Length: 386
Image 1 (cartoon, rainbow, N blue to C red):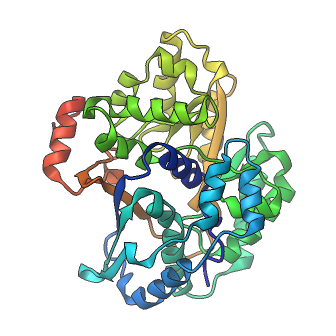
Image 2 (cartoon, rainbow, N blue to C red):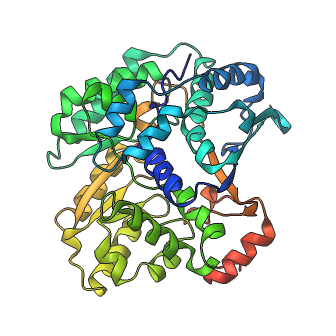
Image 3 (cartoon, rainbow, N blue to C red):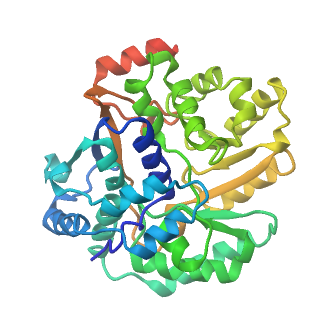
């Protein structure tokens, strides 16, 4: 089966899940699947995907896995105790054929009990699709990987982390490429977002918050206009300065910078870019830090939007010496064996029955099911189209 461990997911699902346990244990969540490329017939593989999800819902955390999680400095003992009892429930997932070969896949239930579905379900769909495109050309994959790593080594001070679990070609390829990358790059491989592989390979797990954390606060916060501030305050209350990378593109960079005042500039370790022009984003963020009397050289800019190694090098050369830098490379690292990967997402669309939205700096990455709510959100935050 594709998923054999509940640790086979991104670290930020656990960091958010712990915060949900402590702050919003009764919150309800709805997620909807979408393939961003029209015309991809995923429904033909529905039975195979359903079988994999059934298997996913049989998994439990092992004692070794719980011990590993408990050894991470920011994971608290009561959360590990909760995970010892945890199991994903199939009843929270609805899967049926949609229109024109689409998958109609939704997840609904308590946020605490559904948050771990996203990454393994996407990895399942990605691998099922890829396996039906023909046998993987592992030799070509290794050739491409070696070329990327050799190019990265031309910048010895530049490091990357693997962020590619959700759209990987296969679990087997993921398990194969990371030891190769680690052997070639050494300390230039800063780690991986995949907790299982971090545990197995002795790598540093990477991750803080994702879009759903800020989206949920559109329903959970005191008022919509203050939802980002509420999300950052709750995060700081949970981690007390640890895991301090803030995500900037849930309602666009303008609205983020309006909310990210001097307090947050000093409180958080840095910010993550996930949509829009990365150089323009970085320049505006550095100017914002300086305007708030924070030395940009003390803060980290994390870039993670569809990166390949040439783009990493371009960004590294542009910003080197002006701030701390981190790069998360996803699909280009874990799904580059020949057949093109499919852009898959499973995003929160409601929290506590109320619509929530992601209004990205890249229009193709936005997501909301309620046009009326989206127009209201744009008006509240002063966004174009509101």
